[in-house]
Amino acid sequence: MTRELRCADLIPGCDFVAQGTSDSDVMKKAAEHARRAHRMVAISMEVEKKARAAIRDVAASLNSRR
Image 1 (cartoon, rainbow, N blue to C red):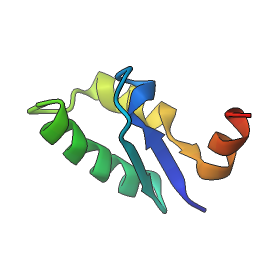
Image 2 (spheres, rainbow, N blue to C red; image 1 turned 180 degrees about the vertical axis):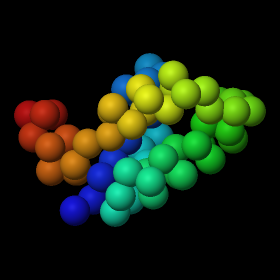
Image 3 (cartoon, rainbow, N blue to C red; image 1 turned 90 degrees about the horizontal axis):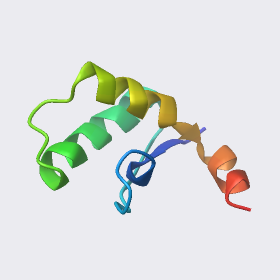
């Protein structure tokens, strides 16, 4: 199953979506995005915790938008 993190859930206005087959895949992509797009040099434990909590199954994300 595909997992995803919508950056807008953490940073309003950002349309980046990281997808992967596991939370680890998603977090790797999200961390790279955070470094490049949001100039985050390091990801704090607090931000990582919030990001991990925001990761959802793609099917669940589609249902929540209806």
